[in-house]
Length: 251
Length: 259
Ligand SMILES: Nc1ncnc2c1ncn2[C@@H]1O[C@H](COP(=O)(O)OP(=O)(O)OP(=O)(O)O)[C@@H](O)[C@H]1O
Ligand SMILES: [Mg+2]
Image 1 (cartoon, rainbow over the protein chains, first blue to last red):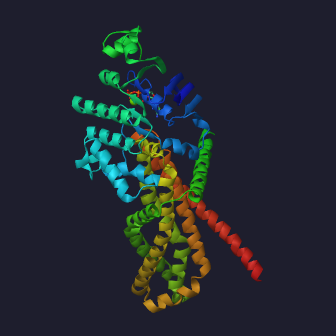
Image 2: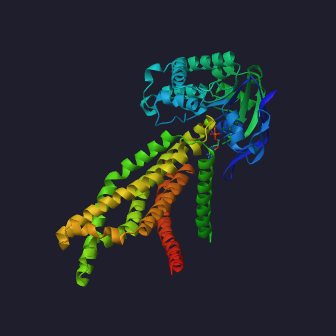
Image 3: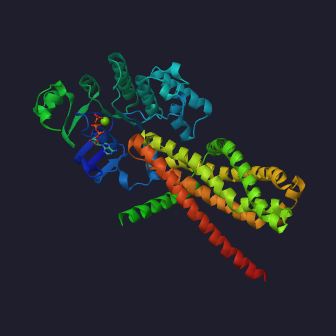
């Protein structure tokens, strides 16, 4: 059963067409990884799936509901089941690390101060940031900001989690740890994951299904196995990181 | 033509935003602590400037009136007249310009930065309403704080007037204060308060609207701040004329009833 789907979705910014006619279904409990060259619309696709970007054309279904017809009040319960890590983290810069994680918990209005603090500390600890508890986002390193972003995305125990480039700017060891954490949490809570990454090893490790975005369209979707053996030369060039090939002819 | 369309587009957008703020204010629970924090920060930010400006406006008004009234031998009314002018016109206008310069610019820059760094999207994605969380508390904060500042500025202006009245025109403190209650009636206080409130609503709406709808990185934030200042200044002056006009009509009607 699909938890999110896009039907003939077209997204434009000003007059520039970013995504043209995308059809995609994400199944419940699946880990879907979006890959593709820079600037081709991966982030836009992720934001469209999460309901943040409004398409010019087509329909977005989230949990079987036609998203664009819902009022904010009707969207709210669904939004609370989502967590999102933004590519640029979007941390609240006037809050400390612990307050960043506590914010969504406070908004729920169902937990006591003590419970909120405990939970926030748990997630801070899970991403290895307990020592930075009372620092502000601009006082911690880029990799730490990424981890804090992940902790905040996880705070509401979301059923659907969007990760936009979770391993960008991390060293290989931390990157592996983060992906392991993402997989661990996914198995533990049976959540659905949509992730953007350009690190193919991590993509294979994480994905049930991979989709490649090129030139505003989904060039292919398939299992990691299918992706590896995909006949299209552009896919082969991308996953092997070859400097010459059909992708160079574009952009 | 395009220019006119743009102006009306902006005005319409601002009004619609004000309407959204109002519906949020009525329908959603706004956390008190957020509002108090905002009121407090607006007051703290504007306190010293209000004190200075209030003091000197009182002083200047007194000097100006003293020059005139000395000719008519009506120096006894010096305190009353200069305070009345401050309450009705100069005070609210001054507070408004100060608010728009300091708090309005600050608010649009802050919200604009939150917008371009996707913090506002993040609030939404975490299942909260950005309007309820960050816009409405700032809006109420600016409006309520403006009344405090008006009162405070007024006290400072009386203070400044008293001192200058004594030095410049030889009117001692008691005499200066004596006729304030006779000249400054409840109507002028009401006028001043309404003006101050409407100017604050202008500043609060424009700055939150401009900040909330910022696009295009650091440059966009800069643009938002500039257009906030320009738009609030123009709207405040228009609003000043408008409230005076309406006030006049109301007074005429009231007089008509009395006689
Ligand atoms: N808010 C926006 N306004 C205008 N254009 C935008 C906006 N966001 C993205 N774009 C454009 O949309 C295109 C796709 O951007 P997107 O961020 O989705 O790329 P991406 O695949 O995530 O790239 P990267 O791997 O570098 O993050 C780019 O050409 C970009 O210029
Ligand atoms: Mg991106």
